[in-house]
Amino acid sequence: MVLFQGETEMKRARRPGRELAARATALTAFVVVAALAMATWRGMDRAPVRAAHAQKQPGVQDSALAVAPVVPADAATQPAPIAPPETPIAACPPAPSNLERAKAAGVTVRVKKGETLISLAADHLGSPDRWRELLEVNADKFTTPERLQAGMLIRLPEGVRPATAEEIRVSRFRRSIKDLRFDWYVVRSGDTLASIALDHYGDASKAAWVANANADTFPTPPDPAQPLTEGQRLRVPREYVVGSGCSG
Picture 1 (cartoon, rainbow, N blue to C red):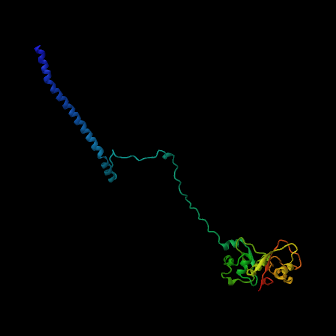
Picture 2: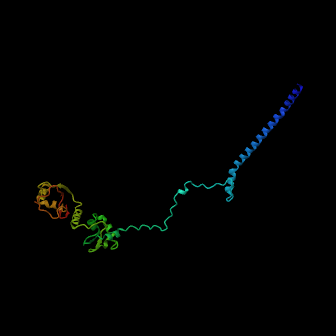
């Protein structure tokens, strides 16, 4: 009994020593783990510094920081760039001038005595203001309107045909009465130039006034007593008209 109690006391005496040893072991392990963690953190924290240092010194790279070039996954399937043609493309030739086009068209008229570029433009181009077009397409023949001479063969612009003699007559007549004061009259069944003159002027003998004011309709003056075409529009002048002109 005494022996058993002695052993028990001895065990109790050794227990604090074992507890201290266990605590010391645990503390040592904690210190080791903390040291490893600190070392790892310091290595990660200095990685950007080493990378920046490697970039500042070309040719010197840290094997641990070397980055492989990025290659697209579909690089093999991308078409190769098209090389520029070896032979340059020729520039488009300049467009032909109005003179060159008129030469190619070959449409000409012969100048008559008394005609000018203005009258020719009015006769064949429809407006006296287009005389500069005639000058342009005949620049190789004369450079000023004063050089135009009777008998000269001049070109018309591309796309223009010469006017007929009747078209020129009508055009010139209409230009001659551009200042004429008149009223339009629509011919009724049975009307004649004499009856129209009698209705408007009170004098059938003034039928010539109506005839002369409508020379574009009547190439030759009709008989004053001849019935006119119903529905025809005629000018009834407010003043006397002589031939293709007019006077007050």
